[in-house]
Length: 210
Image (tube, rainbow, N blue to C red):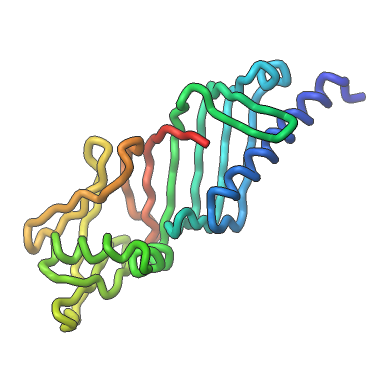
């Protein structure tokens, strides 16, 4: 027979997971699938502590930034949680580890969108000597970009290298010997970037708050 303490622990964790799910969904325009796992005792939760938190989500649209997969992990979280109105706040500016995966389709969706095409155009200007991003693809684990100048499109795709250094992400074009730092929020520290199976994976850490 399951003890009352075990039942209570399960109820508290599941209740907090559901509240966190609601908060995350509110922050995003779309999430196709999300899984939240809280590892903590009932006593810890009541005292405002979460021992470990894991979040996995697929097909995420956050402020028109499109991600295929997002994995988050955080430890020793201090929270202020009000059970009555389901309000949740993090008290210690926790640091999370993240892995974000982006496919060609997702990359093309937001870099060619009205909200974010300025980044694509900036890439074209800064490292390709062009004015406008026309298309982008990932082929054989290589990032390729096509751009244009005065409505004259370049027929060939240019190879662009992507790397992380000191927490920042850089794009490089060997042909023109030019490098561009991609603008990220200061709280985001990217440790590594890799392309595997035509998917760009970002690994790093960031502080969180909501």
